[in-house]
Image (cartoon, rainbow, N blue to C red; front, side, top):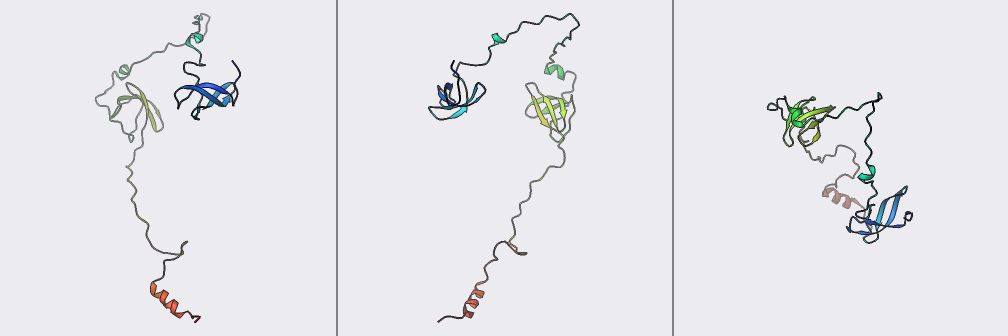
Length: 189
C-alpha cells in the first residue's frame, strides 16, 4: 500500500453521495486519515473507508487463550452476579410508591412511579441528581428542587417619561413656539 499524505487521494464512502468515490485527504493524525473532501460533490466529512473495508481488528484476531487458574496464592476475581429488575423490587412496597417529582428528595433503594418510564428504583444519589433504574433502562433525573413554583415575570412596557438628561434630543417643541421664533427673526429683505 502506498503511503498516504495530506493532499493525496483515497477512495472513501461519501456521506452525501452515498457511494464509494475518490476523495482528497484534508487531515491526518499520524498515519490515520481523519478528514476528507469528496472530489464529486465537494462535501467535507470524517473519513470513512470504502464500504466493507475496516481497519478495526476482527474478533478472531483479538481472541485470547483462556487464562489458566492460578493456584499459587494469586488474586482471584469475584464472579459477577446479575440481579434482575424483578429481584431488586422483591420485598418492596410497589403499591404505595410515590410519584416522581423533581421537587421531592429521594434516597437509595426507594421505589418510585414515573409517569413516563413506570416503576423505578433509586440506585444512586449525587447532590441534586438521582439514578433511577427502570425495567428497560437507567435514567438520571433531578430531585430536591423544592420551593414555591416560580411565576412568569410580569411584562411592563417602558414608560415615556423624561426624568432627566437624555441621550437623545428632547421631543419637538409645540408648533406655536416655532411660529413665534420665525416672526422674531430679522429678515434680510
